[in-house]
Each structure stands twice: as C-alpha cells, then as structure tokens.
Image (cartoon, rainbow, N blue to C red; front, side, top):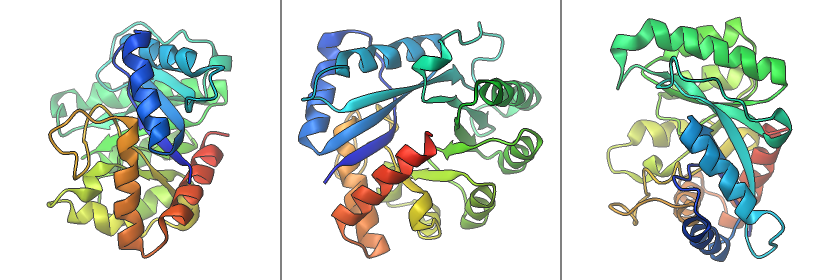
Length: 248
C-alpha cells in the first residue's frame, strides 16, 4: 500500500529536522508528499524537503508547490523557477480569520491564479467561508488543481467538482464535530478524492494534541475507507493516482 500526502508544510530547512519526518512517513507507507509553500519561508522549507529526499530511495518522493497565500498581500513575489514546481500554492481566501481584508485578499488571489495560469501550473487552493468569491475567481480565471483541506458543505463541494477540481480531505474528517466534512467526503467521486495532513496542523484522531506529520495521513485514510465502505489498500492506490493526476 502506498500513500500520497497531498498537502504538507515543512517549517524548517534543517536536514536533521526534515529527515526524521520523511523516515517516519516512509515507515507508515507514504511514498510521495506534496510539500507546500505559500510564503518565502514555507517555500524555502518545501524546497529543502525535496532536496533531502532527492536521490534517496529509502525516503518518500517529495514534490513542491510554491506561491503566495492570502496572508502574503504586499510580500515579494514568489521567484522560484517554474521547472522546480509541481503546483502553485497554496493560495486562496480565508474570511474566517481575516474578514477585514476581503477585498485585498480577492485581488491577491486573482493575481496568483494569473501567475499559475501563465506558468502552466495547477493551483493548491485554500478556501474558508469564502465560497462565492472563490467560485467567482475560479470562473474568472479558469484554473485546475486541488482544493485542499476542504471544510465546506456538500453543495459547495459539488460546485468545485463541477469546475474540474480535485478535493482533498484532511484529518478534520476524524474530528467529532466535523459532520459537514464527512458528508462532503461522501459526495466526492472516486476519481477526484485526495487525502492530506496539512501538517504540522490538524493531527487526526487518534493523534490529536500532537504536531501533525506526513506519517499520520494513514489515520485519515483508514477513517475515510471506513465511512466510504471501501478497502484501505484500494483507497490508498486511488488517492495516490488521483494526486498524481491533479499535478499533471
């Protein structure tokens, strides 16, 4: 069984901190990781993780997304060479934490979508309590890619699926008060479902209270396989293939 953590943040550029995370991930069956940036610091850490994994068959393969997230308005543009990237992100809108910057976030998001389009890259999108503006932006700048850590309603999920996006489910699906995420996870077709950790955040049950890491994606897989009524190895292979497809 091979797993693909389709969204992981590394917060250090130090090999001695990255390598143990990758080793534990491999032991848990993780064969591939999308290391995601979103700021200069996170971009650098994602690239460092890819460098640690490169050429070492004992570690998972690490591919990289870089960009400028919704809290990076006014920051220096991402200057990472396109050839080093599998995707652009994460980018998006979050009106839960920052409703006061709605207009600025939206303008920034549209600009990031344009950058990704010009580079020919899929996007990694964060969307929280910004359903209408996210949909409007994706219709204005047609894009492809992944909606990460989905926490919206099944109706919103279907609209994003209609736009051609893959939808990724995080460990939130295991939380007691996450009925909407579980309901949404059941409407995602087999060929559009992804799994992720969003580490170091959102550790799934039974790892709540710990810093999340790529190895813990196995718990999310097990939970999703149970509620979808499918075998773990089938879901693992399916989500692995889907993640590869989303990044082409």
